[in-house]
Length: 376
Figure 1 (cartoon, rainbow, N blue to C red):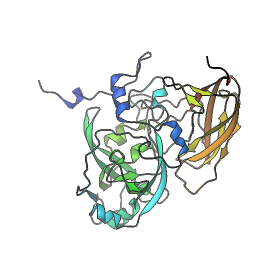
Figure 2 (cartoon, rainbow, N blue to C red):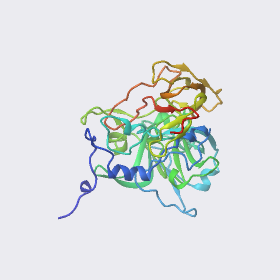
Figure 3 (tube, helix red, strand yellow):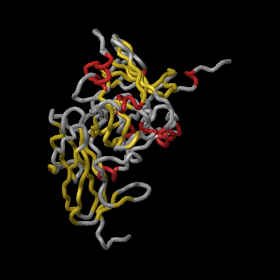
């Protein structure tokens, strides 16, 4: 008897009450990786430390590959670009913080079974490329256009649906300049690494990572709303299986703390000594600039303002914050929360949905303060 794609592609599900991380989730966690939180100290994340999420396989694209990007659909004239042609066009470099839409999923209860992110699915890079709006202006977007569909070269099956990875942006976003979407070919001044979309990827400032299509090969302007799997089925905020759900779009505000002191190898429990302890981290939001970060060292019983580094003109990148804590012997729970200019503040508890998306609950970091003479 023949096999079907559905036989090798499991449906979405929630973990049982006592179900731990399974082999399939461990395999995903081994393929993908988050940012070591101590690397939050870097203004710009080195590519090897930047988070990575790959839905299917990383396409093999040797440097001598004749890569082509097509722009077509509802346009006055279809365009075809090779890499040299794209690099000859006006270029822009934008510092952008990318965060996976599933960041925090593994902390949810019940847990959606998928890539088991804690809070480390983030990174910030300087992306260089051509504004998408310029390509679309040259092609001439036709009247009645609704969506701009972007297709990557990664191919796989998900929940029984065989597909190229595809996502769409509304025409107003794709042709706009706030944010200005990039067709990027460089990361931190060097060609894109394979895992980050070599040779071309989309960069959509302020949007969760699912919108930043990697290994970009086709851009199609459509008169109809795009209903592909990654748009209409995945990346929706649903409470129940039958919900249509709201689309996942812009990044919710989040602050992360660089865990202070030093860690235990297995548990990662943090250890500090009594006295002044510098606390620092990063905060960002895709909705509006971060305007405040507060810190607690007593598990949320009291909150105190942190100092924000001056805004440096990088609207779409994270912002450093810092505060000094006077540690005393005992157990402590540290946390930070961000607020943006539109008044959005991180919630203390999980923002639950069936996909585990946009969960920006406050990070909590348990810390043990031991006396300097305590070696037992």
